[in-house]
Image 1 (cartoon, rainbow, N blue to C red):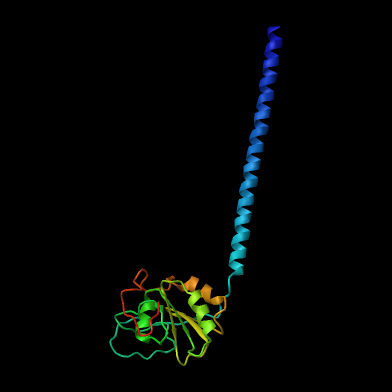
Image 2 (image 1 turned 30 degrees about the vertical axis):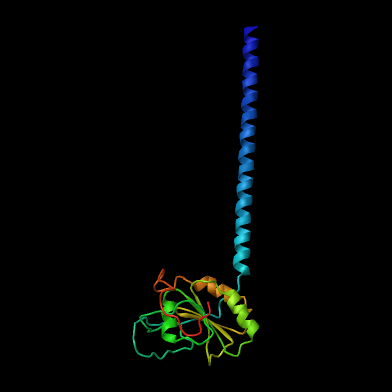
Length: 200
């Protein structure tokens, strides 16, 4: 009788161990499936996000100097993307008149993106540009004589655009505004000089 009871207890313990093992395997299986699903979702989302971004392959890159000077500067490109500039910087914002290159270049050195447009650009296109720009570390101004309707410039980088609706503008701003090319990251975009025609 005692042996019979011990055998029943042993069988019950073995059954409970098998059930516990099955439960553990099931829990780990579910956990692994959840982890795989989360990782797969992340990879698909990240891949889609990167592939959906506009191509910035048309961005031109320039080597530029960064000295302070009080004299006029002749720049190799118009509008300039860097080079020698005034000790004071242009305050970021929206300007309805052309701004001095030497001050705008200093704003680029601080991480601003300078978006310029041909003065004859349609008013609705200028409005689109105004709406597209973040309210910090950007400068918007007309630029007489430039060879494209809209040009986005950051320190050492420039992109020519045919219109204000081009999705590459937002991507350029996202990539280069206070981006890794900035010589003086964290430097102010306010507290400098306002040029004539500032509206915001």
